[in-house]
Image (cartoon, rainbow, N blue to C red):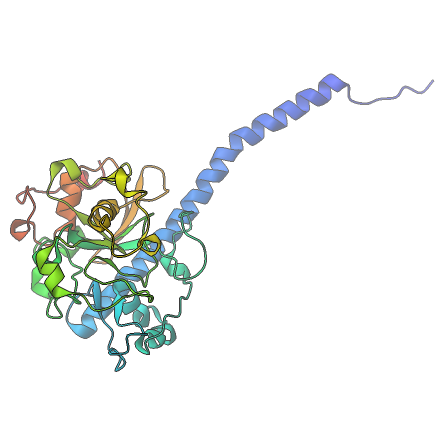
Length: 333
Protein backbone atom coordinates (compact mmCIF):
# COMPACT_ATOMS: atom_id res chain seq x y z
CA UNK A 1 0.00 0.00 0.00
CA UNK A 2 1.35 3.47 -0.97
CA UNK A 3 1.18 6.09 1.76
CA UNK A 4 0.51 9.71 0.59
CA UNK A 5 2.80 12.23 2.27
CA UNK A 6 2.15 16.00 2.63
CA UNK A 7 1.75 18.93 4.98
CA UNK A 8 -1.12 19.12 7.37
CA UNK A 9 -3.16 22.30 7.65
CA UNK A 10 -1.60 23.04 11.03
CA UNK A 11 1.90 22.73 9.62
CA UNK A 12 1.05 25.10 6.77
CA UNK A 13 -0.38 27.66 9.19
CA UNK A 14 2.78 27.44 11.33
CA UNK A 15 5.02 28.02 8.29
CA UNK A 16 2.90 30.98 7.17
CA UNK A 17 3.04 32.44 10.68
CA UNK A 18 6.83 32.09 10.76
CA UNK A 19 7.20 33.75 7.35
CA UNK A 20 4.87 36.57 8.44
CA UNK A 21 6.89 37.10 11.61
CA UNK A 22 10.16 37.26 9.66
CA UNK A 23 8.68 39.79 7.23
CA UNK A 24 7.43 41.91 10.14
CA UNK A 25 10.91 41.85 11.66
CA UNK A 26 12.65 42.68 8.39
CA UNK A 27 10.28 45.42 7.21
CA UNK A 28 11.46 48.11 9.69
CA UNK A 29 15.06 47.36 8.76
CA UNK A 30 14.26 47.70 5.04
CA UNK A 31 12.38 50.95 5.64
CA UNK A 32 15.25 52.24 7.76
CA UNK A 33 17.73 51.41 5.00
CA UNK A 34 15.56 53.19 2.44
CA UNK A 35 15.27 56.28 4.65
CA UNK A 36 19.04 56.27 5.20
CA UNK A 37 19.55 56.22 1.43
CA UNK A 38 17.04 59.04 0.91
CA UNK A 39 18.63 61.10 3.67
CA UNK A 40 22.07 60.56 2.13
CA UNK A 41 20.79 61.76 -1.26
CA UNK A 42 19.23 64.78 0.45
CA UNK A 43 22.51 65.63 2.17
CA UNK A 44 24.37 65.33 -1.11
CA UNK A 45 21.92 67.75 -2.76
CA UNK A 46 22.58 70.28 -0.02
CA UNK A 47 26.35 69.89 -0.32
CA UNK A 48 26.07 70.61 -4.04
CA UNK A 49 23.96 73.71 -3.39
CA UNK A 50 26.43 74.98 -0.80
CA UNK A 51 29.40 74.36 -3.09
CA UNK A 52 27.54 76.34 -5.76
CA UNK A 53 27.19 79.28 -3.35
CA UNK A 54 30.92 79.13 -2.66
CA UNK A 55 31.70 79.10 -6.39
CA UNK A 56 29.38 82.08 -6.84
CA UNK A 57 31.17 83.92 -4.03
CA UNK A 58 34.58 83.28 -5.57
CA UNK A 59 33.46 84.90 -8.83
CA UNK A 60 31.44 87.80 -7.47
CA UNK A 61 33.34 88.46 -4.20
CA UNK A 62 30.08 88.35 -2.26
CA UNK A 63 27.53 85.80 -1.07
CA UNK A 64 24.43 85.01 -3.10
CA UNK A 65 21.53 87.38 -2.53
CA UNK A 66 18.29 86.05 -1.09
CA UNK A 67 16.36 87.93 -3.78
CA UNK A 68 17.90 90.02 -6.55
CA UNK A 69 17.19 91.78 -9.83
CA UNK A 70 17.60 89.89 -13.07
CA UNK A 71 20.27 91.30 -15.37
CA UNK A 72 17.96 91.21 -18.36
CA UNK A 73 17.55 94.30 -20.54
CA UNK A 74 13.80 93.57 -20.49
CA UNK A 75 13.32 94.53 -16.85
CA UNK A 76 10.90 97.28 -17.85
CA UNK A 77 8.65 94.73 -19.51
CA UNK A 78 5.94 94.21 -16.88
CA UNK A 79 4.74 91.02 -18.58
CA UNK A 80 8.03 89.23 -17.92
CA UNK A 81 10.02 88.20 -14.87
CA UNK A 82 12.00 90.94 -13.16
CA UNK A 83 13.54 89.30 -10.12
CA UNK A 84 15.26 86.08 -9.10
CA UNK A 85 15.61 83.99 -5.98
CA UNK A 86 18.89 82.65 -4.60
CA UNK A 87 18.07 79.29 -6.19
CA UNK A 88 17.68 80.81 -9.66
CA UNK A 89 20.90 82.76 -9.11
CA UNK A 90 22.76 79.49 -8.50
CA UNK A 91 21.60 77.76 -11.69
CA UNK A 92 24.77 78.61 -13.68
CA UNK A 93 26.91 77.13 -10.88
CA UNK A 94 24.71 74.02 -10.95
CA UNK A 95 25.47 73.64 -14.68
CA UNK A 96 21.93 74.66 -15.68
CA UNK A 97 22.88 77.78 -17.61
CA UNK A 98 20.26 77.13 -20.31
CA UNK A 99 17.46 77.37 -17.76
CA UNK A 100 19.03 80.48 -16.22
CA UNK A 101 19.27 82.14 -19.64
CA UNK A 102 15.50 81.77 -20.01
CA UNK A 103 15.00 83.68 -16.77
CA UNK A 104 17.32 86.37 -18.07
CA UNK A 105 15.01 86.71 -21.07
CA UNK A 106 12.10 87.43 -18.75
CA UNK A 107 10.60 83.94 -19.06
CA UNK A 108 9.69 81.39 -16.42
CA UNK A 109 10.85 77.91 -17.54
CA UNK A 110 9.15 76.21 -14.55
CA UNK A 111 11.67 73.37 -14.89
CA UNK A 112 11.81 70.47 -12.44
CA UNK A 113 15.30 69.85 -11.01
CA UNK A 114 15.97 66.87 -8.76
CA UNK A 115 18.74 68.69 -6.90
CA UNK A 116 16.12 71.02 -5.39
CA UNK A 117 13.96 68.18 -4.01
CA UNK A 118 14.65 65.92 -1.03
CA UNK A 119 13.53 62.32 -1.75
CA UNK A 120 11.85 62.14 1.68
CA UNK A 121 9.80 65.29 1.06
CA UNK A 122 6.36 64.03 0.07
CA UNK A 123 4.81 67.49 0.38
CA UNK A 124 5.91 68.51 -3.14
CA UNK A 125 5.06 67.09 -6.54
CA UNK A 126 7.92 65.86 -8.70
CA UNK A 127 7.15 68.46 -11.34
CA UNK A 128 7.46 72.16 -12.14
CA UNK A 129 9.81 74.26 -10.00
CA UNK A 130 9.42 72.04 -6.91
CA UNK A 131 11.54 72.99 -3.89
CA UNK A 132 12.53 71.33 -0.59
CA UNK A 133 15.33 73.64 0.54
CA UNK A 134 15.45 77.14 1.99
CA UNK A 135 18.18 79.71 2.65
CA UNK A 136 19.15 81.36 5.94
CA UNK A 137 17.67 84.87 5.73
CA UNK A 138 18.36 85.72 9.37
CA UNK A 139 15.92 87.57 11.56
CA UNK A 140 12.22 87.38 10.75
CA UNK A 141 10.87 90.91 10.42
CA UNK A 142 11.10 93.98 8.25
CA UNK A 143 13.70 94.08 5.50
CA UNK A 144 14.48 97.57 6.79
CA UNK A 145 16.39 95.90 9.62
CA UNK A 146 18.37 93.36 7.58
CA UNK A 147 22.13 93.19 8.12
CA UNK A 148 24.87 90.61 7.47
CA UNK A 149 25.31 89.79 11.17
CA UNK A 150 21.73 88.44 11.33
CA UNK A 151 21.98 86.03 8.40
CA UNK A 152 23.99 85.53 5.19
CA UNK A 153 21.26 85.72 2.53
CA UNK A 154 20.26 89.38 2.06
CA UNK A 155 17.39 90.93 0.09
CA UNK A 156 19.07 92.80 -2.77
CA UNK A 157 15.81 93.83 -4.39
CA UNK A 158 15.22 96.18 -1.48
CA UNK A 159 18.89 97.21 -1.31
CA UNK A 160 21.11 96.32 -4.31
CA UNK A 161 24.14 97.30 -2.22
CA UNK A 162 23.41 94.67 0.44
CA UNK A 163 26.11 92.01 0.41
CA UNK A 164 27.56 89.32 2.65
CA UNK A 165 31.32 89.78 2.35
CA UNK A 166 34.38 87.85 3.50
CA UNK A 167 34.88 89.86 6.68
CA UNK A 168 31.32 89.31 7.90
CA UNK A 169 31.82 85.64 8.91
CA UNK A 170 33.02 86.42 12.42
CA UNK A 171 31.56 83.24 13.93
CA UNK A 172 33.09 81.04 11.23
CA UNK A 173 31.55 79.59 8.09
CA UNK A 174 31.58 76.07 9.54
CA UNK A 175 29.35 77.29 12.37
CA UNK A 176 26.93 79.36 10.28
CA UNK A 177 23.94 77.66 8.70
CA UNK A 178 23.41 78.29 5.00
CA UNK A 179 20.67 75.98 3.72
CA UNK A 180 18.02 73.86 5.44
CA UNK A 181 15.14 71.61 4.49
CA UNK A 182 11.59 72.93 4.62
CA UNK A 183 8.20 71.33 4.04
CA UNK A 184 6.52 74.69 3.36
CA UNK A 185 8.90 76.12 0.75
CA UNK A 186 7.32 77.71 -2.30
CA UNK A 187 8.63 76.83 -5.76
CA UNK A 188 12.29 77.74 -6.19
CA UNK A 189 11.58 80.70 -8.47
CA UNK A 190 8.75 82.25 -6.42
CA UNK A 191 9.55 85.10 -4.05
CA UNK A 192 7.66 85.10 -0.78
CA UNK A 193 7.97 88.72 0.35
CA UNK A 194 5.23 91.24 1.04
CA UNK A 195 7.38 93.99 -0.47
CA UNK A 196 6.63 92.47 -3.88
CA UNK A 197 3.25 93.51 -5.24
CA UNK A 198 1.57 90.35 -6.60
CA UNK A 199 0.69 90.33 -10.29
CA UNK A 200 -0.10 87.60 -12.79
CA UNK A 201 3.55 86.57 -13.04
CA UNK A 202 5.49 84.67 -10.40
CA UNK A 203 7.79 87.46 -9.29
CA UNK A 204 5.35 90.36 -9.25
CA UNK A 205 5.87 94.05 -9.75
CA UNK A 206 8.57 96.23 -8.25
CA UNK A 207 8.57 96.67 -4.46
CA UNK A 208 6.71 99.70 -3.21
CA UNK A 209 9.32 101.29 -0.95
CA UNK A 210 6.82 103.78 0.47
CA UNK A 211 4.64 100.91 1.62
CA UNK A 212 7.64 99.12 3.10
CA UNK A 213 8.50 102.22 5.12
CA UNK A 214 4.99 102.30 6.58
CA UNK A 215 4.46 98.66 7.49
CA UNK A 216 6.31 95.68 8.94
CA UNK A 217 6.89 93.73 5.78
CA UNK A 218 7.83 90.06 6.00
CA UNK A 219 9.63 87.36 4.01
CA UNK A 220 8.77 83.67 4.07
CA UNK A 221 10.03 81.65 1.08
CA UNK A 222 12.28 80.06 -0.07
CA UNK A 223 13.96 80.90 3.25
CA UNK A 224 14.09 80.12 6.95
CA UNK A 225 14.70 82.60 9.76
CA UNK A 226 14.85 83.24 13.48
CA UNK A 227 13.00 85.49 15.86
CA UNK A 228 14.10 87.34 18.98
CA UNK A 229 10.77 86.77 20.73
CA UNK A 230 10.81 83.82 23.13
CA UNK A 231 7.14 83.05 22.47
CA UNK A 232 7.86 82.71 18.73
CA UNK A 233 11.17 80.87 19.06
CA UNK A 234 12.05 78.81 16.00
CA UNK A 235 12.41 75.07 16.61
CA UNK A 236 13.40 72.36 14.16
CA UNK A 237 10.24 70.46 13.20
CA UNK A 238 8.29 72.62 15.63
CA UNK A 239 4.49 72.43 15.61
CA UNK A 240 2.63 74.27 12.89
CA UNK A 241 1.55 77.76 13.87
CA UNK A 242 -2.14 78.44 14.14
CA UNK A 243 -3.51 81.20 11.95
CA UNK A 244 -3.38 84.33 14.17
CA UNK A 245 -6.86 85.43 13.11
CA UNK A 246 -9.22 82.58 12.11
CA UNK A 247 -11.70 85.27 11.11
CA UNK A 248 -9.55 85.89 8.06
CA UNK A 249 -10.26 82.42 6.79
CA UNK A 250 -7.69 79.68 6.20
CA UNK A 251 -4.06 80.77 6.06
CA UNK A 252 -3.42 79.75 2.48
CA UNK A 253 -0.71 80.36 -0.07
CA UNK A 254 -0.30 83.70 -1.80
CA UNK A 255 -1.60 82.39 -5.11
CA UNK A 256 -4.90 81.56 -3.41
CA UNK A 257 -5.44 85.04 -1.97
CA UNK A 258 -7.46 87.89 -3.37
CA UNK A 259 -5.01 90.78 -3.18
CA UNK A 260 -5.21 93.25 -1.53
CA UNK A 261 -7.04 91.97 1.52
CA UNK A 262 -7.53 93.18 5.07
CA UNK A 263 -6.05 89.87 6.18
CA UNK A 264 -2.75 90.23 4.29
CA UNK A 265 -0.77 91.23 7.39
CA UNK A 266 -2.14 88.25 9.32
CA UNK A 267 -1.31 85.84 6.51
CA UNK A 268 2.20 87.26 6.09
CA UNK A 269 2.90 87.01 9.83
CA UNK A 270 1.71 83.41 9.85
CA UNK A 271 3.76 82.52 6.75
CA UNK A 272 6.94 84.08 8.19
CA UNK A 273 6.62 82.05 11.38
CA UNK A 274 6.29 78.85 9.30
CA UNK A 275 9.67 79.60 7.69
CA UNK A 276 11.67 77.25 9.89
CA UNK A 277 13.69 74.06 9.32
CA UNK A 278 11.30 71.15 8.81
CA UNK A 279 11.50 67.73 7.19
CA UNK A 280 9.96 64.26 7.08
CA UNK A 281 13.14 62.69 8.46
CA UNK A 282 12.47 61.22 11.91
CA UNK A 283 14.08 63.34 14.61
CA UNK A 284 15.52 66.28 12.71
CA UNK A 285 16.52 67.92 9.43
CA UNK A 286 19.42 67.98 7.03
CA UNK A 287 21.26 71.29 6.98
CA UNK A 288 24.31 72.72 5.23
CA UNK A 289 26.85 75.17 6.62
CA UNK A 290 28.43 78.05 4.70
CA UNK A 291 31.82 76.34 4.79
CA UNK A 292 30.55 73.44 2.69
CA UNK A 293 29.77 70.67 5.17
CA UNK A 294 26.28 69.18 5.53
CA UNK A 295 24.95 67.24 8.49
CA UNK A 296 21.82 66.07 10.25
CA UNK A 297 20.56 68.39 12.99
CA UNK A 298 18.40 66.81 15.67
CA UNK A 299 15.17 68.54 16.57
CA UNK A 300 16.25 68.43 20.22
CA UNK A 301 18.70 71.25 19.52
CA UNK A 302 17.97 74.28 21.73
CA UNK A 303 16.38 77.27 19.99
CA UNK A 304 19.15 79.56 21.31
CA UNK A 305 21.79 77.32 19.73
CA UNK A 306 19.87 77.17 16.46
CA UNK A 307 19.61 80.97 16.39
CA UNK A 308 23.34 81.31 17.14
CA UNK A 309 24.11 78.96 14.25
CA UNK A 310 22.09 81.22 11.97
CA UNK A 311 23.93 84.44 12.87
CA UNK A 312 27.32 84.94 11.13
CA UNK A 313 28.33 87.49 13.76
CA UNK A 314 26.35 86.83 16.93
CA UNK A 315 27.82 89.73 18.91
CA UNK A 316 26.65 92.30 16.37
CA UNK A 317 23.36 90.60 15.61
CA UNK A 318 19.92 91.43 17.02
CA UNK A 319 19.90 88.18 18.98
CA UNK A 320 18.57 88.47 22.54
CA UNK A 321 21.43 86.19 23.60
CA UNK A 322 24.42 87.43 21.56
CA UNK A 323 27.16 86.08 23.85
CA UNK A 324 26.27 82.40 23.61
CA UNK A 325 29.26 80.07 23.18
CA UNK A 326 28.52 76.98 21.08
CA UNK A 327 30.32 73.67 21.44
CA UNK A 328 30.03 70.78 19.02
CA UNK A 329 28.07 68.89 21.67
CA UNK A 330 25.40 71.61 21.57
CA UNK A 331 24.83 71.15 17.84
CA UNK A 332 23.66 67.57 18.19
CA UNK A 333 22.57 67.00 21.80
